[in-house]
Length: 367
Image (cartoon, rainbow, N blue to C red; front, side):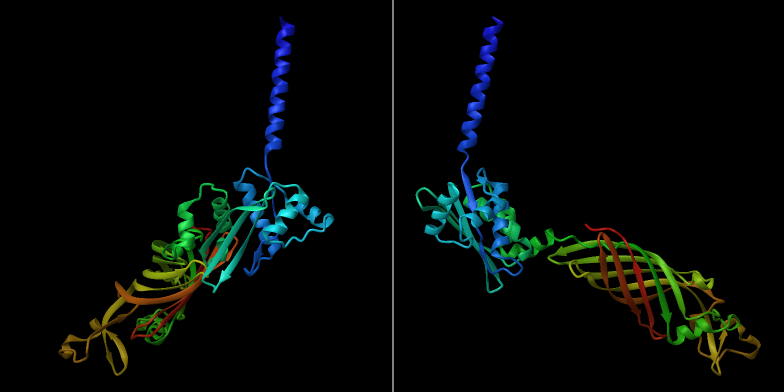
């Protein structure tokens, strides 16, 4: 009984091996030579390698790899740039394959890329199928284009969403956007601001005259928060919120909050933004008498009504008051691997004097 069971198992094992052998030998072989192209940065050989890799990924054929193919080309004196049906049929017979795949990748007017493919039966010498697809000019997506073309020629399932984005001009910007990492410059900010005009004079004045007895240049530190509300193609529109503290290097505490609306290029990193800024400054009411600044309370009421015009301006002896301005800023985000380094310049114009500044930050955020 045991002997009979052992024979049955051995017979079953032999049948499985025979079936595996039949299926493995039944797998058809296919080869791809060089693919004609005029796409900058690619040669017929590299384009052929791209076709070959996409064919391996998407087909059930046994694809002749480039190393074996190079051996055939050298030993059999084969022309690797052959593209016509007769020549490809003869080469297919020489290297012992069932099918040959050829095609081309060509630019037309820098507006489109035409990817053509042709599948040839080596035994009959007849093209089984040909396909031509026109893609929008976007060389960065050439691998995806070839992937689609290979699937089309093999009657495999195609990602229609990706194909539409690579062929439909209306979806082209969205395609570039979906394949581009969007910059996010949120992170700490360190910078320097410089005062000019009346602002600078007031800052340099001694304390007894309402100044700050300081130098009209201060360090700043804070944080930038970003909210991206529009992202199309290579550009994104965003809101930027930047709370800052200035003057700590001179023993001062001058907080501010800037809110800007900006536009940034995801690829180059250049951006431009503008918006209001509010800050806390010490302000006092006073008057000028013979060019000298005096607080309003310094006027002696016994001398009658003050004939001088009362104004409000920055004064270290005054109370904290919210002041406002408008910021124009531009800059660029530098990249080093995953590290983003935003560098920005800004200007705040006012009738009391222009305020200039520069800042930089860092993060490792992409979205």
